[in-house]
Length: 99
Image 1 (tube, rainbow, N blue to C red):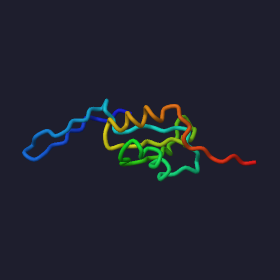
Image 2 (image 1 turned 90 degrees about the vertical axis):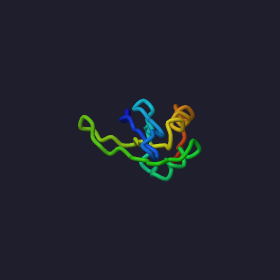
Image 3 (image 1 turned 180 degrees about the vertical axis):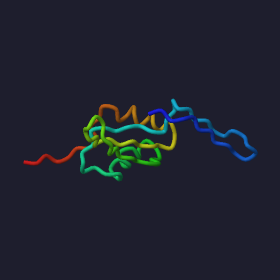
């Protein structure tokens, strides 16, 4: 997900911070069980920095419903990189087995 370039100005119209589209503050988590909500996703990402937003995907693609996908916004690009590097390929949300 590529965002546009954001520029933050300080007093006197000086540039304080520039974030390019390649330094996105968002990352995506897939294969989330339906029973998992915002608070669980925030807890999962919290060790890597401040979680600013969690958005679940509820749209349809090619006639099929897309669920179990969330976008997570962190406070900085570096926090996103830490989270992605740590969580990539990991099983984090384990549900008890029925039976």
